[in-house]
Image (tube, rainbow, N blue to C red; front, side, top):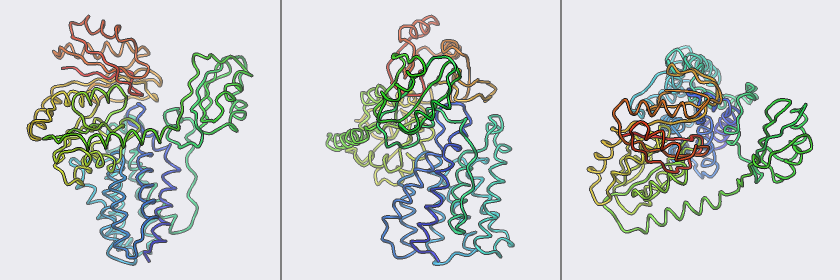
Length: 532
């Protein structure tokens, strides 16, 4: 029987399952760049559903289904979270019409979930979570599966899902080349597996060991009760990493100790950064210049800043059309605001805003016509779903990067109508070439380019283009491509770890190109470039 207690048990088990596998799924990234966040997006989306159901006062399955559907839509983060929300929408439509679930109802619900998901994606691609939900539905629809109990039918569905996930590299060349399965499909499988274990009461299986996949970027997905993110390097002789780990563990969480007998790097969240550093000094030399201590308890201040943005946008004089953009980096946000963005939502790599947050921004802007620049492929679906939820005329321009967003924003004119703005901005984005430089988060070969972990990796228009141990070699390769394509102006957004602006300008000018170098402040990507 479907009742509030049963739904809570199943969804909570699904959440626990994806939470246990989050790090593993985050590591399943085609490109070796620090933006693997599929596991986190699925976890946060599921977390929003569970929290909404916990607050629900629904007394009928139809009301419960409506609450789950609404929460999934509003809390969806990233492409994987948005696709999950469409699957939930289909499931809810079928399950909300009955009080009891047998194998036939299960098959109908999975088919509705698959159909809704495929319809929501403009260009469905096989080898993704779409394939996994479709094959799960096909398995449930088999006559012998329909004759089973709902538990045994769901076991069959999970087994088919496992097989589908393992076969995703056969359907997508990029997955096969990178040596990974599809992250979204793997996450969906764990969600369904969690529901199965919620039905049976059996414990969830052990999670594969992913210790070697942990980095400082991935470890920050964990919430911490401690205040200071503390990072330092110890140099010495015969350093014992296991002993260091044991000594530091009582001081906090999110602990990572890497290195060898002569040099160790420590990352820990703690309320006692000096105490952690003292542990390092007791066994070696800690260079004060390389110590990083960050205050992580700034959420209240960030929320106040967000509310201030919403208030300012709502109180601003009305315009013909408003602009909302998504970006990381204080410099990038300032640039977008200077070009007319009423609200800049902090988000991008590893930090995707939810549908609800984008909708909140769209609603606040003092106009009935709004243009949204997602500035990241993984934010686009959330932006489109927010547009669909809004009562305003909302246009999403499919900008895939901050450089594209800035080029589009440069053409924005709040005094012109939304159709004119949309056409002009889309045309501008179509003319620009985009380069991105980051460090490879793992060794991989993608798009014919082989990158070793830690090397600089240059992306050109979303594809791997060049790699080298020196950032200058990668930058030169991108600049040479821009020059060969006949571009004349190169804008560079300097992020964390970027080289000096004058050195970048000199390299651009040496090729007869005009430089425009600004501070963007984005994490993970020392340099973002655009060429026109």
